[in-house]
Image (tube, rainbow, N blue to C red; front, side, top):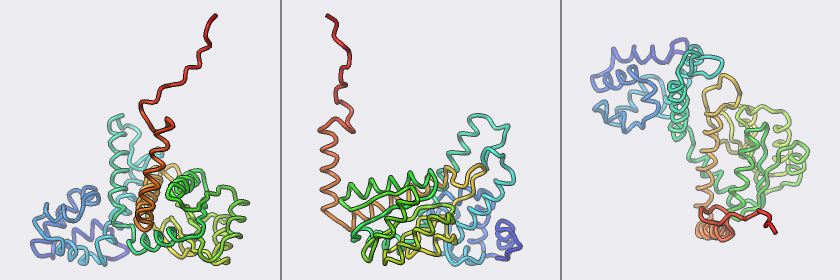
Length: 302
């Protein structure tokens, strides 16, 4: 596809030249690109009366190597169009929208972002990250910014429950100390959607110098991605207000969930036993349960 030509224009042009089966696919893409982005290619194949290999050939007609590359380009074009037509409040929302429209647009955008993750997450990178973390002597989760720091803390809590030696560091001084005391066999997970914070990059450089494996959860093509051993790259449409909007936040949390489950699979039965034990202890002591009686703090009257 020509860089000077928009994706929707390229689809319309390809539709004119394609065989009948692929013309039906291109017609669906043009009629409702957001639905195409949200649904699986099996569903798209069923709707168009074609097969998945025909869907793949249609993507190649547009100049993409595969399904993941096409969906990413489609998401980027839709985000660009929404940014042009949206408001400073949200890339999908108009100032005159009703409450119902605002709720629908934001939730559909979030759902579409999550639905598109499976086409972005690289299975080999996920497997490499899961094995590195499962066998690590120590895992340090580093982040920059309030939202990413929350996700680092969430990752630490998940790994700790699996019985792994993990930490989450939010301030730069602690991050440097953690990086300086890393070594071969250790893992640093660096989380930053923007991926260009100088202090985080410096801590990552120190950790790599000590021989630690660096896993980055960030956008592809960032400085952080360039300085990591394993990249879990997620491209999310830019938010109208913040660098790390709700959709990026949800995408990263979902990626952390996928990664945690894969780590537990690598550990195997000990991880399952530990998670069950933690749940039982919490329930026994009145945490994470619905029927534990409330304490009575009322002072009895004489």
